[in-house]
Length: 328
Image (cartoon, rainbow, N blue to C red):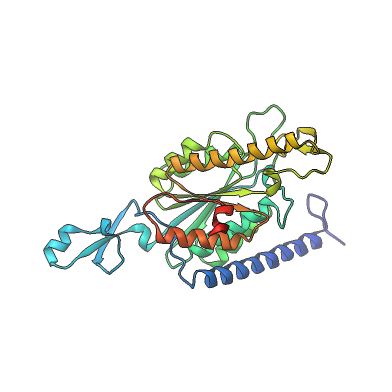
């Protein structure tokens, strides 16, 4: 006799689906890890650029250390230069706030925005993976926040990626003021609170919502913060293909437009550019770093360039769009 899940699917089909997801995630982990290792020549430092908020032990100065970390008392006492490490230098707590609301489940290029968001989380896990480091997550599905407890190691990362890949987007009821990015401000307020030790906070979202800038600023006071903005090319320009329907993924609202109009396409492109510019400025004002990843680009190269540039310049927030990264 065949058993079924509550959704009516055959249990065997569900298990096969889980195996397929696991296989995709394993390939993703291997591919991303191998490519990042080659592009960064095995040196994954650079994702964390801050000085850390919690003082740790002192050690002898070595060429290349940041002079702002000099421990002058110990240096005077021992007559040898010493620097003070931060807790983040030795054990890093990373929290990823992942937006998987309906607007992320859209894509017109190589992958959907949700797939790229999950791949970005995989890269963060790989780049921060070392003994003592821990990775946790807050997942926004469109109407609620779900917490994934922090852990370490490959098995934990794979479990987190599986959780993300099986998260179903939830659309808010019509008229509800909680849009698809409702969880972003709330999630940032949680990260800024006393429940999360200072470390690395990574926001992965398309930022298509309001109210996240001030909470991001509060989180950046406590954490070294990075915003990874996910963009699809059709959010920046429309092809001249005639009459099409534009659907708001968060509300379900449908609008019919005629893309043969050059004026309409120009206005659409101008609005897309302005949105990216506004997002970059807001992230910079919040004291966070900013990376734009596009679904139609080789995102691993863009990420590696960002990490390398961040590693070389650790003095001010970095903002790199995919187009700028590709021009270097």
